[in-house]
Image 1 (cartoon, helix red, strand yellow):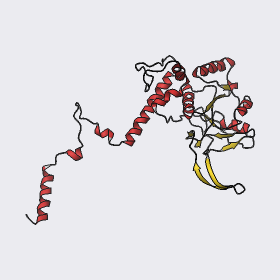
Image 2 (cartoon, rainbow, N blue to C red; image 1 turned 60 degrees about the vertical axis):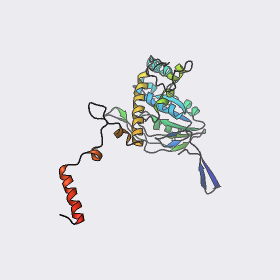
Image 3 (cartoon, helix red, strand yellow; image 1 turned 90 degrees about the vertical axis):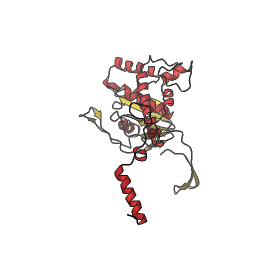
Image 4 (tube, rainbow, N blue to C red; image 1 turned 90 degrees about the horizontal axis):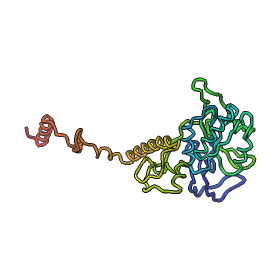
Amino acid sequence: MGDRVVVAEPDWQGKRGAITEVLPRRNCLERPAIANIDRLILMFAFPEPDPMQISRFLVYGEFLQAQIVLCLNKRDLIDLVTWQAWHDRLQEWGYDPFPLSVERGEGIDRVQGLLKDGVSVLAGPSGVGKSSLINRLLPHQQVATGTVDPRYGRGRHTTRHVELFELDQGGKLADSPGFLQPSLPLPPLELGRCFPEIRRQLATDRCEFSDCLHQGEPGCRVKPDWERYSHYCQFLAEVQAQQVVLETTANPDREGKTKTKKGGDEPLLSRKKYRRPSRRSLVQSLEQDLEGTGQT
C-alpha cells in the first residue's frame, strides 16, 4: 500500500489500467505494510507512558525520515505539574509533544490540522486510543475499539488490518495494529542520526573517525551525560546483534572457518573431512576391493 506507479492506457470510468513501472519508495513501514509515508503520528497514553517504549518508536520514526508528531492521550488523567514534567522531558529529547484527550474531544482540531495533506500513519502500542481517535476524525468509519485488559493493565489489540482512509480536509490516514516493540532494521552506524541529542552535539564538532559508534572511542565528541544515552547503548547492542546474524546467514561457512581447538590457536579441522579412519573400516574397504577383482 502506498506505492506510486506509472499506469499505461488508464480507463478512468472502469477504474482499470496496466501498471508499467513502480517508482522508487521514499520509505516503507513494515507494520502496517505501507510505503511513502509523509507523517508518523506516535500516540501514547497517560498515566504511565513507558519512556523506553516511546524512545524506540521515536528512533523508528527517525529511521523512516518522516515527520514525527508525538501525541500523549488521556491528558485528563494527570495534573498540570505531571504534564509539564513530561513536556519538558520530551523537549530535552528533541520533540514537542502535545496533549490529547480523545474521550473529551480535546486536541482533535490540532490533529486534523496536521493531516490535511500527504499520507499519515497513526502508530503506537495497543490501548492508547488510536482507533478512538480515528472514530473522532472519521465518524462514519466507526473502527472497533477495545478496553484495558485487567490481567496485564494494557489495552487489548483491536486493529486487525490496515486501511487507508480519505480525510474530508484532504490527506490520507492509515491506522496500524498496536505493537509493543517495533523492530529497528538499521545498521549500527545509522543509529546515531536517529537521536536528536547526538545530532545536536555533532552539529558543532564532528567525531575524529567517521565510523565512531559514540561509546567512548578516541576522538568521540558525543558525551554520555543525557537521559537517553542508555537507550542508545541498548539499541546499539540490538542492531549490532542483528548485523552479526545477517552476516552469518549470508556467509554460512564464516563461523566454521574461525573455530580453534580448546586452549590454543590451532585451527579445528572438520571431523568428517579429516578424521583418521578406523582399522575396521580399512579392512572392510579392502575386502570390497578384492571382491570387485574376483580375488579372495
